[in-house]
Image (cartoon, rainbow, N blue to C red; front, side, top):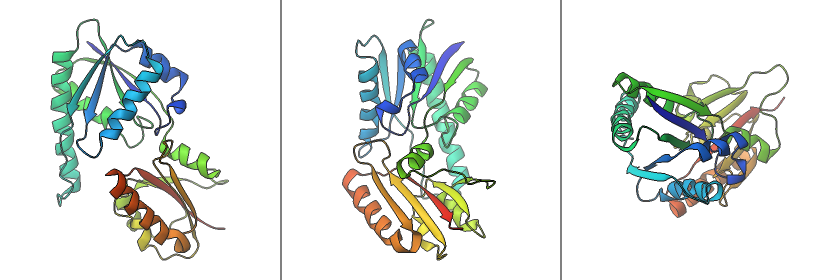
Length: 249
């Protein structure tokens, strides 16, 4: 039985790591880090900075491996994602068998909240199907959605109104946008919306030194957001952003 901690570390600010997460960090003897390759090595550095802050005495091992690549251009999006998850599951199963000793407590440091737009729990279900016995503990974290609302000083929900959270590729399917948080919008789908009644609260690199925030009527600020997104993506090689779209009442 392998003991594994899935630790939510927030969107980027080490100060937003919870006390429960720090306690879990201090229990783990082995940390698995996926390297997404050139251009995204900052994501690895941020994880290491969190470990240096909360485990300055060391006493743990760090296993860093290359993350399998997902075919971002595949016409079958869901099929490509499922294939990517299977590749990750094979890698995780191998790492758990070869790197973890009988007394080890392994851990993954997961951005934001492990239960919101993170695939690790689903991948570990596939690992179990491969015959690896796991004892999991999930430590919740502050999500980019919570950080976004805090930075813009807006509540996520209004009285008696639901909040919808969806990926960017599903935004165009909505007949009307009322109160929607959008994540993983790599194509800037919001720019195609023409509704004059929408406000947008947008943020990128939330919780980091590079944090950028823009808010205002969508039609007035969407060109600015697109310009900033492309500038920052070119500068850093990657971008993580999210936004709230809300109809004014």
